[in-house]
Amino acid sequence: MKDIAAIRRRRREGMRRRIYYFGLVVTAVAIIQLVRLAWLQWLPHSPAAPAVHHYQDYSVNQRERGLLLDTGRADFADRKGRAMTGETVMTLAAFPVNTKLWTQAGQLDKLAAILNTSPVRLYDWLSKLREPGFYHRQGEKLPYRLSGKQLEQLGAMRLEGIRVLPYHVRYKPPYAAMHAIGYISQHPERLETLYGSQLEQGKLKLHDRIGGAGLEKSLDSLLHGIGGVAVSHYTDGVNKPLHGLDMRLVRSENPYYPLKVVTTLDLEIQDQLEHYLDKQGLKEGAVVVLDAKNADIVAMVSRPAYDPYRLDAGGKEMINRAIHAIAPGSVFKLVTEAAALEAGEAELDEMFHCNGEYGKYGLSCWKPGGHGTITLREGLAQSCNIAFARLGERLQYQQFMQTADRLGLGKQVGWVSEQVFKPLGQTLRLLQEEEGGRLFTALPKGRDGGLLAQTAIGQRDVAVSPLQAANLVVTLLHNGQVRAPRIVSEIRYANGHLMSSLPVRNLYSPYGRVAPATARALIEGMEDVVAYGTGTSLQAAKWRLAGKSGTAQTLFNGKERNHQWFVGYGPVQAPRYSVAVVAENRLSGSHNQSTILFRGVMDILAEQPSG
Image (cartoon, rainbow, N blue to C red; front, top):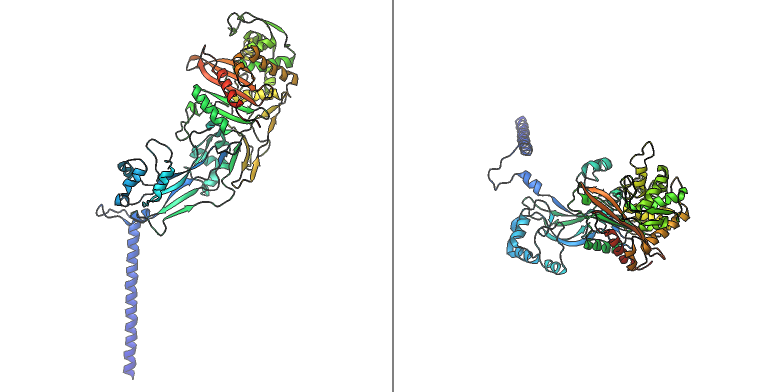
């Protein structure tokens, strides 16, 4: 019995040793495998042959490939709800897959025929794809828009990695009101400054585009939204589609976003004016159209135009000349007359003699031989430099500045919130790039008659923007009450509910308002300009018009040039629109292009339905 027990004990001990050794072997194998994996993961590798791929290549290739269809950024609409930015088009998208999948059964030839391109060019594009991309025609910046017939033909085909997808084009050509609405661009430094916390949270990336100018910039933090729409395509390690996953659409289901910004612009008027100005050959200049009732901006055109997809930050085409302040010339005589009347330094029937020369400061009248003996009222209609230079020398610097401030000049006039704008958490200025203009760059210690005389005719240091000039006319139409021109009326959620409204605002001067009698005198003076003064060519317009012309001497690249102006309103009997037109850097002695354009703009406005 003892022998049997000993045998059993030896067997159990042998079994334990075998299990122990087996465990050691298994552990050693596992350690070897872990070391091998670590070596593969961390150490450099050299494939044995070109056809051999390292496992890291497979892990990189076997991934989700995404394509952004819509950034989710808020779009702009005109006053009637018509889209000014944002248009969804059907286009062709391709995802990097094994190129052999595209050459089977002649499918690539069929696709090329549908797209009206060559198979060689199409294959060249597809084979070079490293990231998902949209199909573009040669030389075009936007994804190719597919026609209804092409969509029907493509519906009968199926190529791996190629899909027809909806793409949200932000700036659809022709891009209306481009300087007012602005553009988006990459600006990492500013993005870090403004949105540092969102970058840290991963909500934004440094290469994301943000507003660079216009409303895109001033409303940027509201326009971002909460996410875009993207499509994902999955491939394995050798770029073959994973059919179980195929494509997946990723989007936010929040009913409140993206927002819609409703502007005061009228898209139909804007389009017509831009087409008209381009046809008339306005190279440098601007047109501003304000609603005479409340100074809302109905249209804003600046030339030259720019391409929102090929931006030149230093180019002159980037300047919004509608809010850029330049010398106004004789348009400023409206302010000079107002200052003289308010100060009691002149009467409308006061007589002035003009023989064409002022006799000092190198100042002369635009009319050779002068206007003879005329009243102040006639002097405004005929734009007599001599009469207004004499007025200027009667006035004080402060009288000029205070009257200009009362009329909304020498400062920014565009709409700004009175208090913190709640959706932004700070005050809001709609036209951040607006220049306030000026009367004097610096006041001399003593009285400078030449400075006062030249200021009186809108030269020397005086600078006014077309927006301010058009708003000046609205101010006079409202007996001296200055409005703050709006370009946005409300912001709405995606479901149509109101997020915030931007009410019509008045601007106030610490010096009060000009007297209603002064405002009426200037309005009547603008009527005289068209009745018998420098604007008689406007008598043939569709409406009865009133206004004031202006020509300011300037230097451009060292050569003498003129800024040509015309500002006014129409129709006289029931004013609907105030318009400012400026043609910059025109050849000296050339006809006043702005007067011609003013009539054309007003004729277009006369065709618009009332109400």
